[in-house]
Length: 88
Image 1 (cartoon, rainbow, N blue to C red):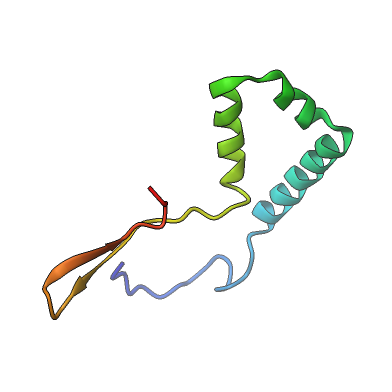
Image 2: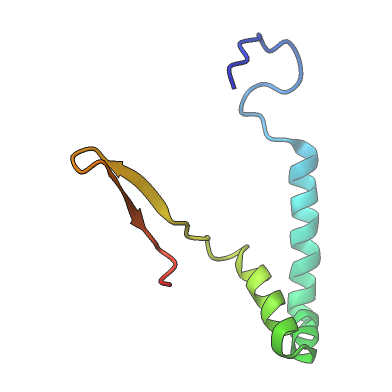
């Protein structure tokens, strides 16, 4: 963005958002209790096939970073070089 306006209010640059922090802590507490009680594993064990895989893959996105393809232009050859990290 090319917005060159001077910041006149709100949080100072770099100050964490207190509401976001408190919400994250609340979610971590709730999930921690659910995991300790085995409720999440119990519910996952009820799922089969596509439903199970959909949930596991969605949860994996919070633990394992997604890898993306990278493309850049080779100036000497003037052709794009594509690196596919997905293994497909």
